[in-house]
Image 1 (cartoon, rainbow, N blue to C red):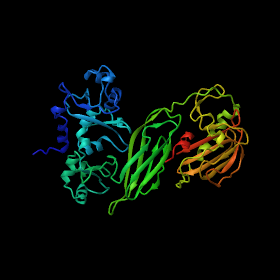
Image 2 (cartoon, rainbow, N blue to C red):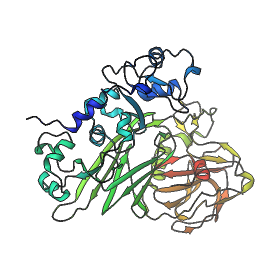
Image 3 (cartoon, helix red, strand yellow):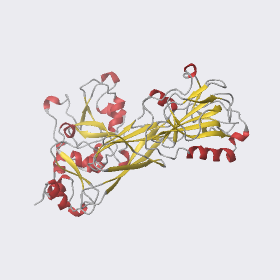
Image 4 (cartoon, rainbow, N blue to C red):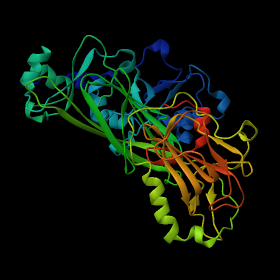
Length: 471
């Protein structure tokens, strides 16, 4: 006798016609979406991955003003499917298999609903199309991960679940299909809203913001339970996680100002200690995130001493400066907003902003401005914006008299072109402490303070740190 799984049952839900009192005047010839406050035709088309013109044509919408809250729009391109649909944003840690198991929807149905041609399309922040029933009536399921050396029968006994129930709940045909480390859904007492593709010890993964942009610092926070260690990578930079509070781990990572906009893989990995007799569970989850443009302007061509743009000089110095940020200090030494590094008179006066595209001596615009330039003259005071430890203090060819401070958690600040340096390597500084004077040393066209902020080995926009509390 053939057993019909809950996945097959769920597939039939969308085939049921809508209640008559909810239907529009004409018979719906496809799934529908109920317009919500703030919706536009363009927004709806983008979320459902359909053409705005086709959406308007199918629904007889000729003017944007025709769109009103409560209106039922037929979603084209989903022939043979009936029912009410909704959308929600995809979070990190969610993949097609895990979402299929959470919502008890066959993968091929989810592919159709979301017009997917590749699993990569479920990038962080993308719209996931779901039946309203799947959202309104969350199933009482919990995640469970098959441990290394553990059999499906052992897992079933520990969780007090019939092994056949595990197979049916996860659209599996045989126990040999389940691999160590695989995340399964089992009957539970409450809905499990954690990331569907990660072990149950990972309760949530939050990216702030979830759409990255050139030159910005990203906060990655993971809420977990148990003996958990975390790592990861993004665009050739390793992620370092530090305990921020009980059960919460935080990583700060910069997005390079010249990184080409597009989709890039974000990896979060780790190990989880399990109860005896099972060895630690190693896991890694890879998901695409979008990097958008920082919309940085182009500065006028700058004329500088040829020596200061000679690769024989700049490349070794750039490598030396960047290497200072390779060290990761697990202690976070700052609190709240960073203070302005200059006197109040100049704190809102900038001669050049971070990220501006630059040309030197008629070159192509292959350079970018790696910091924030404050107005001021030789001898103006420079202050530490936050507590930290000095890791560099001395003269450089391009950067002039320079200082770099380590604030912990992979965050560093740099101070260039100084006339005087008042601190030395290894010295601890406090927020607001006088550390030097503005000058005109190195590659400059006039005296000023060039201030940099680094996060995860990448320069990021310093203004953000004066306006936003990290993490």
